[in-house]
Length: 168
Image 1 (cartoon, rainbow, N blue to C red):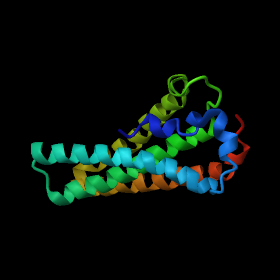
Image 2: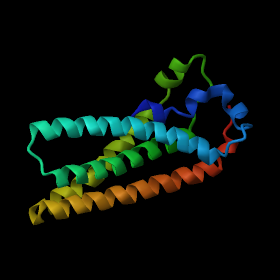
Image 3: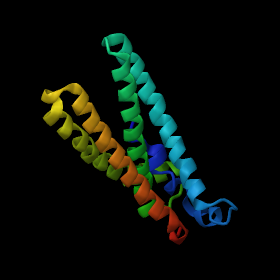
């Protein structure tokens, strides 16, 4: 759920309409935030479904489940922001149909590859710190998730400022 094509192709799907969209009386930051929110909503629904299944299948402490949902939100935020950032850096604006904008766009693949790296950055501290206690491992994962989310939002804000230079 953390790699979804709705975010990784959000700009590319605008295609030749991108220059026209730049004339809207809406700040680019607002447009990017709206695209990011769509991705976060999709990620949130998936996270809630996974949490519900986990709640019934594994007897989890409610505190752990809430902590996992919080971390899941941060992970989803980082994944969506990095995916949107990738699409903003290399938009595929020339296409004949919206299906082509999605199927012939490598930004989804870049997002998936980036996601593998992001997951590794969560797993390594969790595995290394698990013997010291689940709470310490969970805190380390939360810290990594928070740092990645800040980095992703920073990079996205930088490219948002330059988004008026994207050409169709």
